[in-house]
Image 1 (cartoon, rainbow, N blue to C red):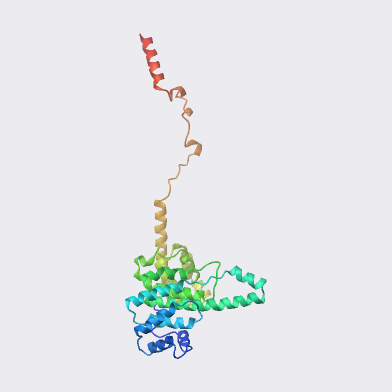
Image 2: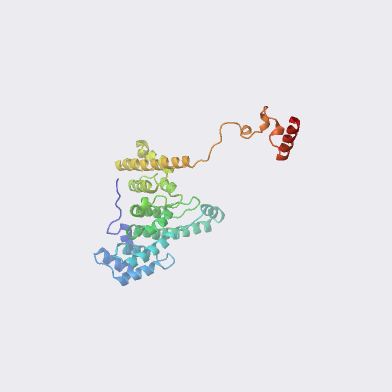
Length: 322
């Protein structure tokens, strides 16, 4: 089995750029610079950062992103880690939901004002999803198994909704779950929200090998048999060439995922066979229940008779014998 290592002790170029965009006297910048210099954070600083995550609104989204990075790499106490997990899950569950149909109506009905509204909402959604993706990344380092379901919900795509930055949240949640699921019983299989397998299968159509490897790793742990066709497609060289992916590890992980998915499919089929309802015989329905009159050898007046008739007939027979 191939394990995928993610994240590093240093911030990504995007996070590093955001850090130095903040004011110099900002607590988020101070603690981030100290952490990058190898200096730890104090308990009072961590408390301020935790409280900053509780504030509503995304006008200060850059500060929240940096605060999430700092907390995820700080040495937290059990109490601080518990509080951080609650805050991170709360951020992750505040998902922007934009109806695609409403966007289209605004474009054609309101023209300039509709485009303006779409631009504003896209900007707000991208900022919110920046914070949500940072929360998922933080959970990959300090998250516990209690956060697994919330991460799974963040992966499930909504068919009639769309929001800028949603895919980045999905990928960050996948990386986080790949670290949390091995800590759970049965690798979390059967404990994830419905629809997660279909959402993961859609992400296999990409030219990014690291994304494909992360998705295959997750399908091996919690995937349902419905993903078998998508994974089998990855085994074909022609398909990998069409999406410009030539990483040998993909074929190996696809094979591992297929073995598990097909085993689950066989188990489900055997379970359904054991619990199937009893089938009727091949005889026509009108022959399943038929009247006794079909038999010519039996008199109908003798099929059902009361005891009084039986006694009277017995007495008459006795009198005749006498």
